[in-house]
Amino acid sequence: MVPLSVPTSSAIADRLARLDDLLETHADLWRPQVYKLESPAWCERHPQLVANLLALPDHDVDVLMADHGALIDFVARAVPTIRRAAPLIELPPSENHGLPQPGPHAMRDVPGRKAAQIERFAAAVGHCAMPVVEWCAGKGHLGRRLALSYGALVTSLEVDARLCDEGRALARRDGIDTQRFVTGDVSGPFARGHLRERHAVALHACGDLHRALLEQAVEDGAGAIHLAPCCYHKVATPARAVMGDPGSVMLSRNDLRLAVSDAATAAPREIMAARLESAWMLGFRAVVAGERQSMRLSGHRHAKIPCEGGFRNYCEQSASHAGLAIDSDIDWAAAEREAIALEHRVRRLALPRLAFRRVIETRLVFDRARFLEQHGYRVSVSQFCERRLTPRNILIAAVR
Image 1 (tube, rainbow, N blue to C red):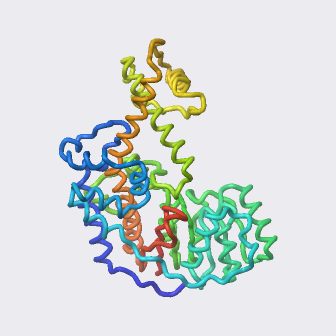
Image 2 (image 1 turned 180 degrees about the horizontal axis):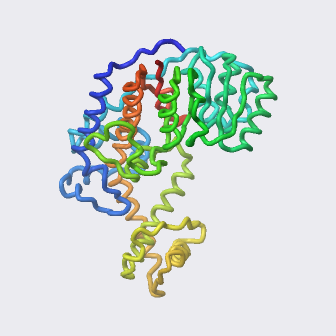
Image 3 (image 1 turned 90 degrees about the vertical axis):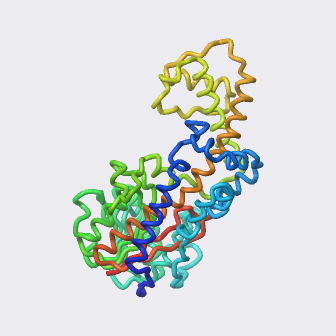
């Protein structure tokens, strides 16, 4: 791995401070969960924003949901101070070291989008001067790619013995004798010592698992790290999502989910199915509220009910799961129309909150960069692939 061109210590600390200030200033826009409140308090303070949102056609809503920059620009028409977010979430592309191609069939067992993510990630890593440790390896696809292209010596750590066996079979098939699998839980004592003078790599390690990687890398003295974090909410407690100074903004688990709530481009059919499910969930809550039973639903985890049976069937199954009764004289056709109208409104009022997805994610990434920097690493933060391949496209690269 070539030396990194990195931001200075003051630049990382300054970015964190400005992200915190932005989040604190606009907390009224991103903290309320509109799908639960329907009309958050900011609607009264920003009537022009509400008007702009409710005037959006469906196509424009889809476009804004898929483009962080466009969404920030749209909200900034009514709330100009949010425009400060744009430069704070801007990251350069990762350096592409060139990835030698091992043949057309090497990644044939990996789904197309995942294979492309691995290609970009491996190209950002480049030649590995040290033995590689693949963290949360699964079947070892990333490690196998590094071994095929660069001849890297790879140890793939994975808790699932079945996945280890499948990974060994794939390595044998491709004639790789430089990749070995070790079964164990990297979140516990098993991980100790594995990273000493090693190059740690992890593509989409979740929550506590990527936190464990960074802590173990510091303890063992890993020589280099390439990490694409994911699922910040998958931690024992929300406080563990931040590794350094929590700053002025405390994040709840729902806030952490917001950071990873966007998805790669979905098919139109999937989008419509998700919208229908949201509409019927909102409609069910309205029916329950009409029955004065909303208190019993408070805090209740909504069951995953199929929509194929129609709106009434959906509500009746949901009520049964929640232990509620629904009157038999409900006008179901009218209730369904109201549910669809409510989804139309709520989907638009959710956009200001979604404008802060990447802001929160960037804040969490720079928190990890700062943690490594404070322990003697030179750190860079970049985007290793296009968003269409994965929204979790941020790469933390560090060397001692």
